[in-house]
Image (cartoon, rainbow, N blue to C red):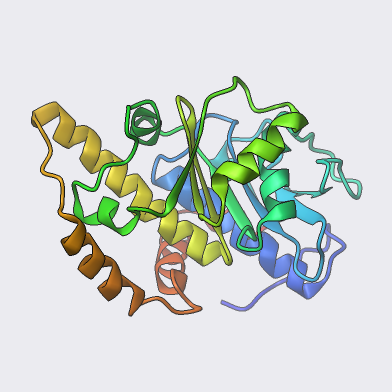
Length: 252
């Protein structure tokens, strides 16, 4: 479907497409149950800028987010433009330090789904015990819980613990997933969510079978052969068609 600008938003064609992509992401996450009331966030850098981002309007459910209702903010979480919706500044604290300091943090999501939070609250974190979790072995950063992430001084430790990883497990809290594109972020999160769901179910049944290192190495080698610049694009397009068929109002 062709991109159609909204007369109520003064922005470039590139920004409008980013708004459509982000609004679609919110609706997809809501459809899949990966949301927490009006809280948590998915943020996306405005194309062509270094310090402008789009974020959900505080007070709306993720299933209510539209392209025009997304709020544009600067690197400090301050609103740009005359969008009437407020912003949960506390929620952007952790996103801002990743956007500023990590080259792969173009799109970021932080959630509180029960299964990902359960793994974040488990000694050892994500275990190499299932098909999906083996993809992430050695590719996750961990950060100790310091309370609600609202203090800017925690940022240095967040960045240090993230390292060059695209996934950060905030212990006793929840995951942060970063992508070089919104498509990559989505598919990485999809796989992480699945990995955590299976781990939680496995733990309820008994002692998990841990995959040997040499098998993980082969598993990841074969994964890397599939990685392209369009990683996740087909998946994201498929789920966009799904939510479009349910309710296309996210395009408004």
